[in-house]
Length: 312
Image 1 (tube, rainbow, N blue to C red):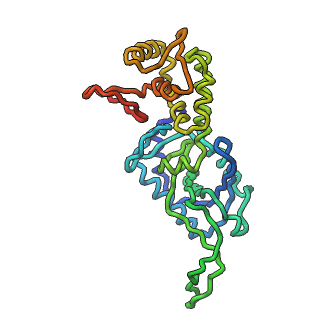
Image 2 (spheres, rainbow, N blue to C red; image 1 turned 90 degrees about the vertical axis):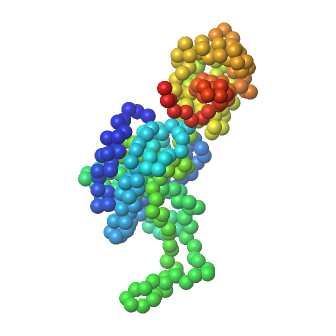
Image 3 (cartoon, rainbow, N blue to C red; image 1 turned 30 degrees about the vertical axis):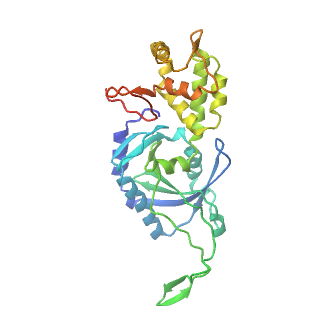
């Protein structure tokens, strides 16, 4: 993530009176396959009373965030009141934002059937001249259909009136993340990862790592790692973490890693100063290069870890 001073960003976000902001509503459709998703943002007209409610939903969601820390591909689960931060340019969100920025020139929904199969919905709140854009994944998708076991009626003008043919859509009072000043403030990590195609960012980190391996001579054959990772999400996460931590750029780290591998007989060999990689040992090599094999000073047991926090 690019350098952003997170506490001030969260403070500025929470200072906005979003409940009094002007809200516009959008539905998001998605198509494609992992790594090449395409998103379409469609504007939906809303009445003023609903706009007020939508702005309040975003404001209440932001109020729940009291701490902000960087998002990582192996970030631990969030504690209550904790949000995660990632730059918008590390996700697909900028593709969506570009369409929302068109405002009245953007495509609009004109028929209820156009809401079918929506992927997520978006609330754009303008307050004090700034925009806060919130998204939430639609669970199960929207479909226009009649409810055969119920009569839908409205109490209007002191009488019940037939409302059977009116399409009904359910909006949850939830927000998965908000975009503010080029940063996504993630309120629900699992929903965020399912709403946006964050896989593309990991694939970019993988490719950058492999390029470093080639130029620095870290491993014997980087293409073996590329093939072993393939589209496996767990290995993509680990490769992205290896790139971010950058231990492999430290010659002393690699020298010490070689010594420890020989001492503990971890089955990792070196050839001409390079780690010998095979399809069978790629996962272990990535763990070691991210310093993910740790020993307990209490029991002297050795563990492979995915999430770690420095304590000393």
